[in-house]
Amino acid sequence: MCEAKGEVEKEGRVLVVKRIHVDYHLKLAPAHEAHAEFCPVARTLKGCVEITTRLEMEEI
Image 1 (cartoon, one colour):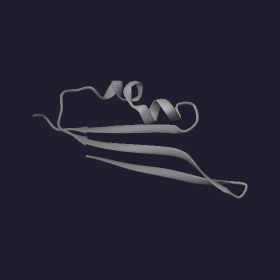
Image 2 (cartoon, one colour):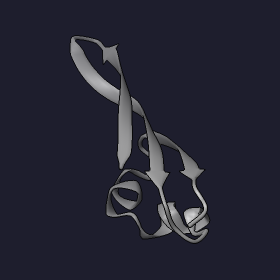
Image 3 (cartoon, rainbow, N blue to C red):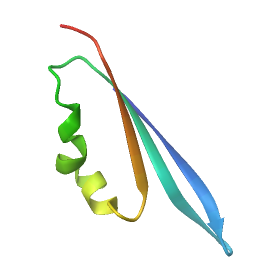
Image 4 (cartoon, rainbow, N blue to C red):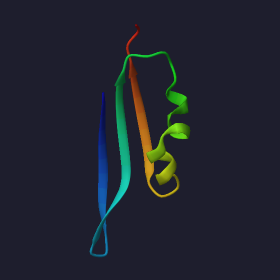
């Protein structure tokens, strides 16, 4: 499961997404470091929108 939150700011008369934060709630072996490199959305927005992530892990 994940939850995403975007922060929108007004540029002139247009609303623009400036930041996206994603919280992951997963049960898995450690792999979080690779997220941005292999995520299509993160790769598309890289350099345009600041993206931060947090991983909450539970041992399985």
